[in-house]
Length: 176
Image (cartoon, rainbow, N blue to C red; front, side, top):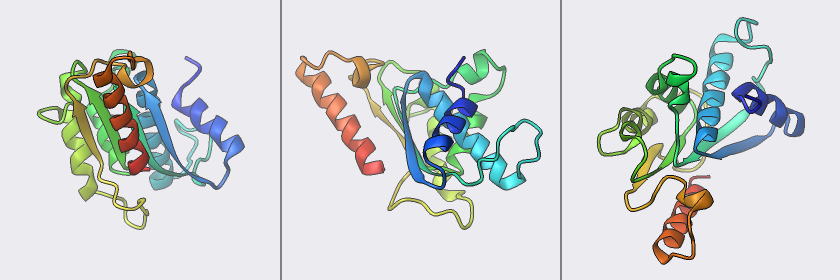
């Protein structure tokens, strides 16, 4: 898989050394964003000791991450690791906003999902000394009438899909 978190971090570091920025993605890209935030968090807390991290990303200033119709299950399915733990680590360090469709996985929906809970609760466990942008409240927001993919590939000729996509994009802009 070419677009791994390490690839993402390495590619952006070429173009944006010492820059502040946010990450945005759709579906599986949200896994890469979340994983990149975990890699950054581990690097800054534990240093670049060369064990699992070939690059020093300590100069990074990822200010937030936004994911539309997120899919984090790659962490469980492909790597046999816990997607809830990954989201918890990432959200404890970088404010995350996950915008969830009505037919997305239950574990990421705000009503009952474990991932939604750890992302929303993460506002209380920020790293000391790490600035956050304005009043970012990490959270998952559900668009119950939308289908997975509505923002990037939804049929926007339908009024409700167009409104749902515009509302989600506006939430992302406000979060940044």
